[in-house]
Image 1 (cartoon, rainbow, N blue to C red):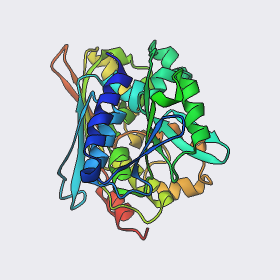
Image 2: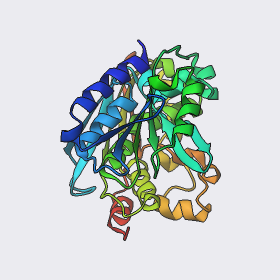
Image 3: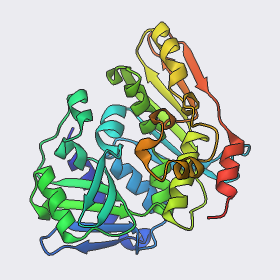
Length: 316
């Protein structure tokens, strides 16, 4: 299973429907491609769903479904996968912080597996040798050719064999693809509390789609709140029930002392530095672990509609 090849094929399908999806492709001088899904291009809901599936290496389904009326009166983003570690941790997780020549972006997608520099890949025992690479950038601007060349070099591919898809947080496509990270955030939290991710067989997540924010900073707040206070995840695992009961309370976002107010307020309190925020916060609000060995289901955490509504209704 080559993650980058799968994502590349999905990119080709997206580009065939570029006009319908309101995305734009720019070819760089060295032959690489920048696909604008929500920076200068309008993008939209379908662009966001496709962007999310590419970010998951086309190993997951992402859909818009009716949301919970008691949470927020709008649609929700639903994601499910039978390849949770490959799709979410080796591909979707935004573990590549890109900073070069004044350009900043959060990098995700299967290009991370080609680069393999993150400590996470050593712990997962996973890295991919590729001839072409696909990445997703959450950024306010399209990357210059120099940044694309640096990414290609880090991935071990010639610049002409790199495709980067870009959307800002405060865009419709960007909002969708961030909210589609419910399962990913849950898996990362499981990993942090010491659970063997090889025991996770399948995953399902749901979170409300917030209104698109007026700016990226407000967008970061709303998309995080969608998961932290409105996200619910079910994972099917093979494990010991005692272990699940012991680890479970530490998985939902409510295990963090920072939990309880909109993310924008928390972010502001820490001077907009993600790395100062308690890492235990970054997880869905509600988690259910279904043990395939015993048939038991273990539930932890709870949704916080009042925080979701406060966040989504705020100015911005």
